Image (cartoon, rainbow, N blue to C red):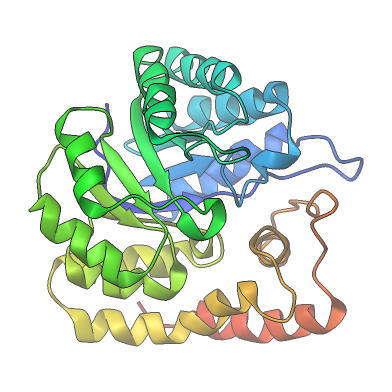
Length: 299
């Protein structure tokens, strides 16, 4: 299993004009991000519109990414969250069998579930895959919050190998301190707005949507942070932050804005599936200006 660390792109899922999955563009994007120096790629995640795809389509996306990255140092994380344990386990098992290094899952949240039932769900995943299991902790999305102590304890018992902690910086810092840099549980933050803060606090990785747009700059920020060169890292981060923050402003969505920016960079990813909206004409004009500023940053 490749080491979980660094910049992990929460990759968009490209679609053809008729709405079908564009497998060749999945491969092209995967190669592009590998060439940009990222450490890992998450496919079939939230930015990848997993809720808009069926299991068969998600398998196609995961397979295309795994096949493309298999002879590289870049690891693939397969998003496997489904509404039922049965479907989640099916995706987890498949992902491990074809060579995905990790699988990422949210806790069940569509209907009320006890904490004991959630742990049974995660243990069923772990028992049925050879891939490392990553907890996707996103209280703002699921309404379910785990304490740092709980997450660390589950890591120590071997349930999770990492956590994507998409929540406030205070919780992430408490999680890092509670974990005491235990190498058996890697910690990442999922908010672009907290990327540099998370690295400065000792996070092992970043998993975010913004690295679709500025992967090279994100890699440089990560490298500088690991060298303790935070002033240089901050300079680059401040230059790209406007486009990162614009993903969720003025009605924009991460899939929509990421796809539009990738289209500008020569990767025809199509548009999000309905009901996720396309980027407005006004937002496109703003995004073009912000993207140009981000691409011109020296790093």
